Every structure is written in C-alpha cells, then in structure tokens.
Amino acid sequence: MDTRQFTDCLLYVSEAMIASEPRLTALDQVIGDGDHGIGIKRGFTALKTLLSTPGFAAVDIGDCLLQSGTRLMTSMGGASGAIFGTLFRAGGKALAGHTEFDAATLADWLAAGMQAIHQRGGALPGDKTMVDALAAAAERARIESERPLAEALTHCAQAAMAGAEGTSTMVARFGRAKNLGERAIGHCDPGAVSMALILQFMDEFANRL
Ligand code: ADP
Ligand code: MG
Image (cartoon, rainbow, N blue to C red; front, side):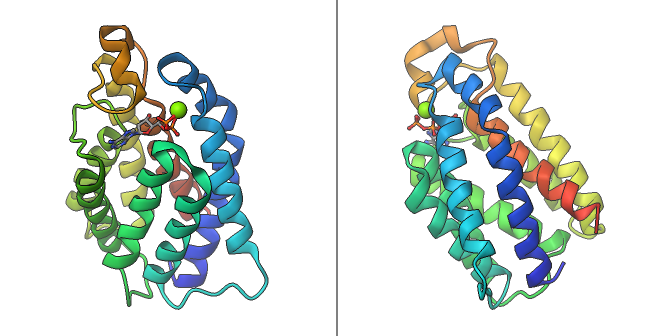
C-alpha cells in the first residue's frame, strides 16, 4: 500500500468507525459512562474531514499517521482521545520516511503504539483496556511481518477481536470500569472492541485492493 492508498484506507476506516457508534455506545453504557461511541464518532468524523479535504496530501505513511493522530487527539476527548491519538501519533513517529505500508511497517506501528500507550497511561495486557486487543494484534503482526500485508491484516484483526473478547473475563485496572470491580466481569471493554474494529476495517480495505 503506498501513501495515497494508506490515506484512502484510513478514510475507509473513519467511515466504518463512525457507523460503529451504536455498538460502541452500547458497550460503554454497560461498564463505562456511555460516551465511548460518541467520542469515536466525533474523532473519526474529524479525521474523515481532514483526509477528504481537497489538497490533503501526506508526504509519507508516518506523516499520514502523525496528522491523523493529532486530529483524533484534539477532537475525540475522553480517555480514548489520548489513547487512540497516541496510537496513531506513535506510528507516525515510528514510520517517518516510509512510503510503503506492508506487514513489517504494520508490526512496527503496533509495537510503537503499545509502548507509547503504556508510557502514557500505564496499562498492560490483562488490565481490561484496548491494550488487550492491541497487544494480541502486535504479537501476531510481529510473527507475520514477512507475509503479504492483506494476509497479516486478516490475522491481526482476528487476534485483536479475540483479545477484545478476552477482556470479558477480566477485572479492570484502568479507566472507569475500574470502579465496577468484579461487576465488570462478563462484559467486553469498549476501547478494546474499537481497537479490533480499526484493524478489521483496515483488513476489509486491504482485501478489496
Ligand atoms: P472515558 O473513560 O473518558 O469515558 P472513553 O469511554 O472514550 O473514555 O474510552 C474508554 C476506553 O478507554 C476504555 O474502554 C479503555 O479501553 C480505554 N482506556 C482507558 N484508560 C486507559 C489506559 N490507561 N490505557 C489504555 N486504554 C485505556
Ligand atoms: Mg466513557
């Protein structure tokens, strides 16, 4: 995927994330304050506007991720604005100068995102946050870094959704769900589902190219 195709991929992801608002809202109503879907919709609507502005051009994959992350961070709000903004911005820094998005750059992005999100918010796998989906995807991406991008994305998206579903058995150590203690058991973390959906929609786009 070149920089232009990657930009179109993020545009596709933005539209699909906007459409996922009801599902994400429903999840956050159970173990959070119900605003996760609204925040995601607001952030990805702002990102869609940025990417579809006539004349928008990113110089490389890193620049596209950096600009996207800044836009998400300044528009989404809530814990997830900082967290998902950091995911994209960390990728922006890690992939500066890359003009091809392949399975190896995907692995670099997810690894950089994991590290930056941990530094920012302290969460590790097992804490019932989006990190559980991201860690599963990053692990899969590392293993598949030599594979064709479309194939690696399919497996990363599956791993991320399995990671998100796995949060259902966990007690939260970060975010608002922490206040629920054991009552959060039996429910998926909304941010983890968002993380898995981002990869699922990237996979959908890549497999239609
Ligand atoms: P808020 O908690 O401010 O209402 P959102 O509802 O938009 O924010 O997002 C909640 C999601 O943010 C959670 O489901 C979780 O995945 C993620 N999250 C919260 N705190 C952290 C953290 N420290 N590290 C990683 N992800 C986090
Ligand atoms: Mg919330």
